[in-house]
Image 1 (tube, rainbow, N blue to C red):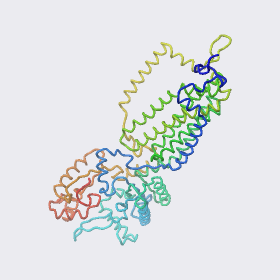
Image 2 (image 1 turned 135 degrees about the horizontal axis):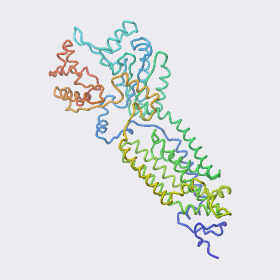
Image 3 (image 1 turned 120 degrees about the vertical axis):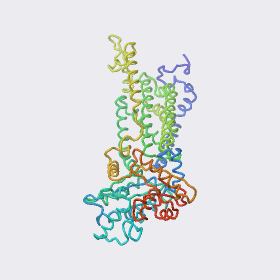
Image 4 (image 1 turned 90 degrees about the horizontal axis):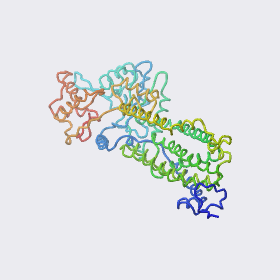
Length: 584
């Protein structure tokens, strides 16, 4: 009688007494000879990381969505504090459905909305703009000289005379197309946002901000008023809000995968074990993220789906190997060890290749993509433990049902009458491609499809191909709001800022402004540019105004005294405090 350890893998061993527990590789012996310890450790890790997962936050950050090492972005971030609220901002258009904005009820609604938004956490309040903010002013040429003031005057009382004065002030403000629609049917409340809430130092919670905006919309929308909201913060808020539906899809995916796997195996216990181990991998992933200082965002939230799907795929392979060995009469523990020997290295190699593939995304210098790469790599890595180690060990305890084990070998059953195999027609069809004639046709077809795919790939478009936010459906509320703003205003949420640096206090010198004016004329000719704004353009308008409104003086004045007088009335966003940075 041969020794137990001389029995080769794959030989049917019905009794554990015939199997040498010392056989197999060192990892196999360490794992399967200490099965209970491994299961207990995995249970403890799952409980710990499940608790850690409760602290996982779901948010996004403006800076994570942009390539921070790009020279343009580096320049923006270096000078962000001096750009007067430009960058991450919300545009809230308040529309008058049954008239124009010069209505007491409409203006009162805009005032209430503006006052509420002013107190929202994270708002960069000094640079917020609306018809009611003091920074939105008008300037006019009168017989006594230049005159000006806030668009909504201090003595406004809602009377017809006050409304007429507001209309006149709006027409002289230069805000038509910017804060006021050209058809006078709506106006914008511009809300610049900071990176962090000033009172607490915490990052802006875009989900909570979006909920506040929706609550504000629900309060003030009526038969007479409509509200349209655009901006990065609202896109992210809508994405996070939609993740509740994603959770429903996740539940549906689990149910569908479970049903398909059970249809294949007809074994409820092994099916549930595969699903359990795949879910354990997801729990480990979600627990490791906050432990390592990461969070989920609207992009990486898809990774748990991916991890679950990969876990189901590898788990089904392990279960199928064990099921077939048990069907041949092998003891369930031995079957689990045989399957571990055959598939562990191959499975680990496949998972490591997946992890490296995701890690390659790290070369893309956008943090949200890099976080996605790290999240996916962590998720694939934990599958090595949950699906390549834990699953075979659990199956070594539970085994599979006898009916499922016999069914797994149905393709190997030989017909007693003629000695032929009973095979499903689909597999019989696929077997044809092992013959030269059929294989040649398949290779030629694949080559033709590859060439067609290569030619078509040259037509691939990169970037946003549709108006609005590409992450959302074209008919989503946000994209409808965006379409409204683009159709009614000469400015969109896409603002290109050119920063002109000068020596200190030289931003208003004639030589500087003439160079900026030449640059602005060039920029105005570029396709897609709707409007430009700069201190040079303001200087020409102001020079004409200071000369009785005569357009003969529509030019940058050479007198530095005149330029100094103009810059005192210029909007804060056109230059910085030290007058060494201009924006176009």
